[in-house]
Length: 235
Image 1: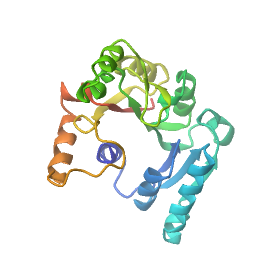
Image 2: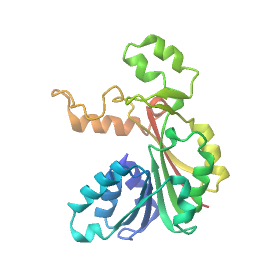
Image 3: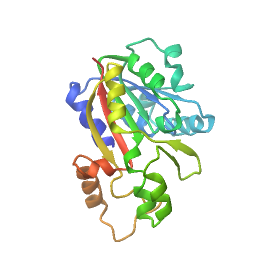
Image 4: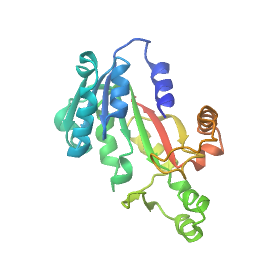
């Protein structure tokens, strides 16, 4: 997904321009630190105290110049209008957040208002049209049958979550003046692997990345990806 995001950034901004990035639901700060290392100014919003502590610990190990480019705000993504002025950011990331938001439209509208004209809104969501893939590939046939007509699922840490459909999100983005410009599939072939699980020794990691990258851009494969990466651009 990092390659996809970088591709969108390069396509829209001059090389070397220092961008203002808002990372909503920054977690442990992986994406925020990566973008700060690339020279951008990043503000991370996170409500979980443990995640914030982990992000601050990771940031403390970075050179001072990178540390100075990262700001961490404890809060909820719905509160961006409290902390920031409209149009304050060139890029807004919301990765792995919408699945825990029951009604995401208000959150998305608030995030779009944070974007300057031409700004990029990057979303990573669970793909509702592929919820049967993980249980089916794992041999859980009843789980696959139950998933066909569902927009909810139980994730790997036992939390009930929600999935989104491409057409519905595309309509939402158009309605908040950040219409969809590009979308990708993420985890087409590897969703049965658990997070942090080591890859089998015989696997060719570079070939795996190449296959996933190509599948994530190609129909029909990207439509059955576990996750969808959507990129909207502010009118």
